Image (cartoon, rainbow, N blue to C red):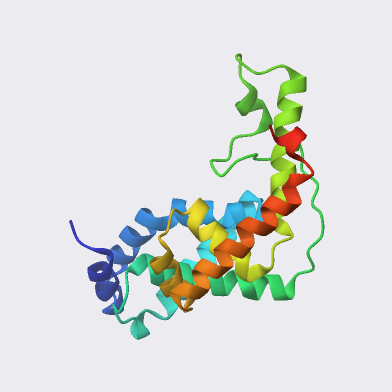
Length: 193
């Protein structure tokens, strides 16, 4: 199997098929990464597309110094920061027919025949909303580390490379994020259990 780095070097030489292969391999995880950051499927898809556009546009500058995914998530993080700087963060309303997960399932797709009782579903959604809101209150640097570690399963060293920060900084930001979430959710323990 051809590695991501080899594909990217082919892209650098103008091979569009190599680029299509990279997109095919990494599009879904990248959309899921953004989905967990913005909780909006359309925005997540748009941001993933923008990351691939940036990677393609700057392919001539690519040097395989780290794993391709590290490079890709560095571009993704920079895009995310740019977007957060330019957009006011406002609460969003969601239609019951809107996608409720990264796969595009709607509320109606999710409930199915074995759906939990409405009270149980509402309780679960409330717990999820509480956790999401707590994560949203984290400073961007802590949130980025948490999302890469928890949502993407990246190791601390990979996060350090992707964010271009020391390993110790990753560890301290993760610790700070976890402690802040614990504090924020401590008052909600009855609701979260």
